[in-house]
Image (cartoon, rainbow over all chains, first blue to last red; front, side):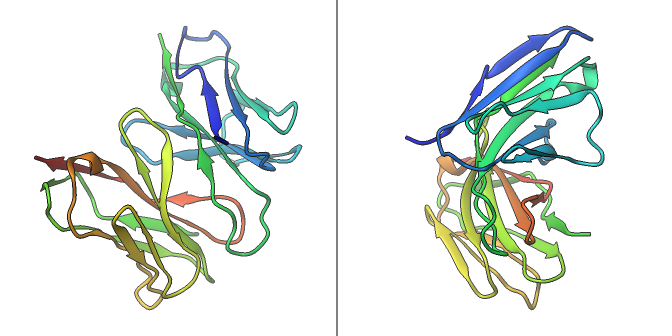
Length: 116
Length: 111
């Protein structure tokens, strides 16, 4: 089945130690997104790629970076994780926008990050 | 800017009860509207959507109708099951790719 895969599902890191979360997709979608979701809150968009075009949200901290080496993979790098970065990180994909109605976003299962 | 407001949770019902989760939105133009469901420990799954006024989205017994006159997209189900326990998010997207989510409503169904 075509899907969005996130690895690992659970990640533990130490305060200030760089960490990378990965996302892969078999849907061949043009757009890939990273969201941060803290406990009992709505997902918050960090950034997205439209093909190779990177789009950062204005309030995303510089501590968060992303790479998309090819259509299938996208990485979230947290350069110096703080305690406040502990959250669920969700990857999503969609086809390129073809109308004002837009295209459905497909979400992965998420990676829960713990910062010690 | 665009925004989505959902009824505050948590909502607790008995099995086979009728469910309504209210959602209203603020946006210019004609956004697409969505309901996503998040089961414990998992990512979001699209439950249903509607892309224009008076459209009704439906899936797994859930329904929601796009009401432009009241800027609403309330989620309903006639008879809930224990397996429907989850967090439900209403969302909109207007033209661009960015989804705007409501704050989520936690639903618990007791046997």
